[in-house]
Image (cartoon, rainbow, N blue to C red; front, top):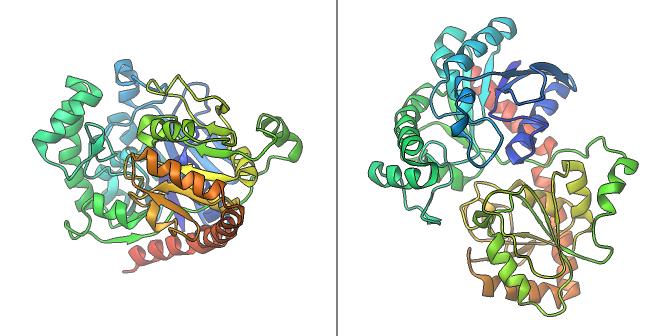
Amino acid sequence: MRVLMIADFYWPYLGGVEQHVRTLSHALHARGHDVTVATLWGEGLAETEWDQGVRIHRLHGSAQRVKWLFSETKRPWAPPLPDPEITVGLSRIIRRERPDIVHGHDWLARSFLPLKRWSRAKAVMSLHYYTLSCAKKNLMVHDSPCAGPGLGKCVDCAMRHYGVAKGMATVLANWGMAGFERSMVDMFIAVSQATADGNLLDKSRLPYAVIPNFVPDPGPLSQMQLQPYLDRLPQTPFLLFVGDLRPIKGLGVLLEAYSGLDNAPPLVLIGKQWLDTPVELPANTCVLHDWPNEAVRAAWERSLIGLAPSLWREPFGLVVIEAMAGGSPVIAARSGGIPEIVVDGETGLLVPPGDAQTLRAALAQLLNDTDLCQKMGRAARRRAAEFTVSAVVPRIEAIYRRVLEP
């Protein structure tokens, strides 16, 4: 099959979706498919290049020319409606590549929808966030889980988040384009049942399958290349958090829980800084930035316990799988797709989101019971085997074959 992936961001940008799209593209190429990726251009990046047999096209969009759209990050922003320049760029790629399947992974893929009938390709859309139902993609309102979309509520929430003009425009554009997306996509892939529910797939009677993300195979970095990263880790057992260093990821709750522990091991935080990243950290906390996935995977192998205390409904939580694959039991929030991964009491412990006291008690339980911690770590590694390339990619191939059936 000839597959065109469309994703807002791609390597060398770092993040769960970026990692997923790259790993999936490589896996499909290794299985004999012709794979191309279309993504947004970023400063200092080549417009076209090859990545281990996968063709990469980086496109310039009209939204990138409006600098005030980017307030918290230097990344380009893909709006929730077709970008004229991106649509033109995609038409050129489609003429050249003639894809059978166009597999979208976020709002940038909406720039393909006007071309769908002309292209004769089938459209598959992976939902990694709550993009069909939320202009912020996270289903959070005033720092609390949202009960569901409503035009007035969404406008107010988005204006507080993006600012008045950008917020109102984003809500209205997403409100209209979500309907267009529902009508044009042949099959949705939700990364968890929680993601399917949050995007109202059942209510909308849309065709979908729940297929989880997966852990990539070990990367190409040698031990010599990894060692400078590993030398920055504590030499004693440590707790590990990986992800955006933001309150929405439960970082403030984690720091509160950790600061109340007696004789706690070091806490390591690996992730990206944001404007709302906490600046005051408890003693014995180590913060590391811009680590490649291979180094993060090696850190999980050395960690004592993995931590994922997100306040928002994590659609999936790839770092949870990576922690479990490294043999770490995981203490995580009982929300979103995480309970579909972590088996409470077997591969880790689930706690209510935002509850620092219960999180602290869960940490103390595992820290004070070495046998239980190790037993859960072994069970976590076994559980992670269900989320590997060999276990998941054939299910995505089956979706491609299904939509291509006459």
